[in-house]
Length: 221
Image: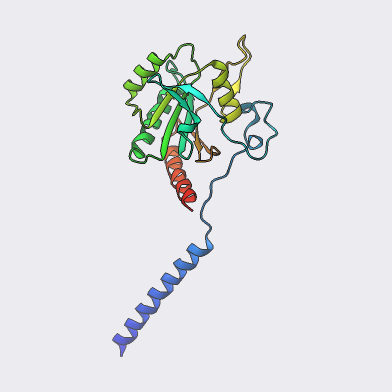
């Protein structure tokens, strides 16, 4: 009799645990990433012409040149999730750390063709195609996964401050000079900003990896 009671108690406890976890999963909403608009971002990082925008912000069309002297347009990223950043090859401070963390992301999603990387130089007058190619080889960039791109100063400026919202304006003789930030930007398959991440912080990279997976699940639904 005692044995039967013990078995019954174990069965009821198991059912209770399963029920609790089931209710928890049903009642706990799945995390969803925000869709960032210019009005939600620190105003110093956003061009004054778009700071008021609260809806429908997307990454603008672009046409740039990568480390292999190939034209790269937004079409290459349409329907993909990608991580973007801004850097320059002679940067002695944050850029080397950012690139190490970007390499880690490349390795993490190496076999996932729907996750891509895109790095923009903010000194196109220095970072020629040849310079970007040498830099990409030194860093172990996989061309099919990661484009390092250059273009005109105006193009890069507009992308950084009017699309990706990650650069501060500075007063110089060149109206398109800027200070890039350490931010990595997570972009969804519809060209919307879904997150900003400190590209110099390896612990934050795990947050980014987790958010990419959340975004992948969202886009499958």
